[in-house]
Amino acid sequence: MREIRAVWRLAMTAALASSTAAAAPPPDSLLGITLIHGKNGDSLGVPMQIVLLLTALTLLPAVLISVTPFLRITVVLHFLRQALGTQSTPSNQVLVGLALFLSLIVMQPVATQVYEQGWQPLEAGAISGTEAWDRASGPIKTFLLRFAREKDIQLFLQLSHASAPATPADVPITALMPAYVLSELKAAFQIGAVLFLPFLIIDLVVASVTLAVGMVQLPPVMVSAPFKILLFVLVDGWNLVIGSLVRSFY
Image (cartoon, rainbow, N blue to C red; front, side):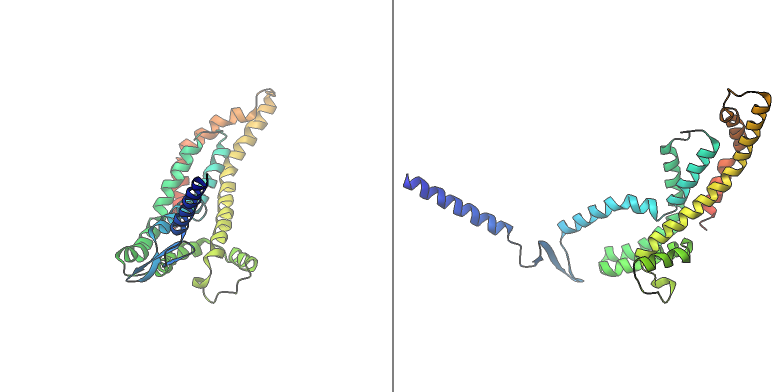
């Protein structure tokens, strides 16, 4: 019995020692983050780079929706569908796909600059990750500054208790991104209100006619829907709306 206990204790001691040795971080690690010595200095190990990449991919949809023309385009298309009174036609998938392709068209020059100034030198090993981020954030900040209102930027600078920047290029991106979102929401609501006006006039005329005729049981929306769709098709509304939306970013 004593021999069995001794063997059991020896096995437990060996298992604890092996697990402790396996869990011990290597000498070139900090809190489990392995550092690799390269020609540009110490960099993160491959596992940590994969973790950071996956984290960035999870945040990518929110960035795509908020800080690109996708925001303005989707809101305007939603207002247009509501003004036409077609309920769920076109479907959400169609509107999102259209907004995505239009956003790619508008953001293509910015993406090209980010790739040439930041990603290519980083991939070639000519610059570090920090310098690549500084170079890549320049075209993005330039795009956001074109459409972010000064009033919104001041609001988020005050909320973040940040000092007033000397030049527009010194505006921190943490205040610039939400300011761009607010500015785009205002612009999208303004465009949506203008789109509503002609269809609202048709609704008022049809409602007045149906009440004058005595067609109380027939909803005016059902009667006005074909007229609104016909008007939209005759003036080539999709071409006008999409063209105006894309040109508003140039």
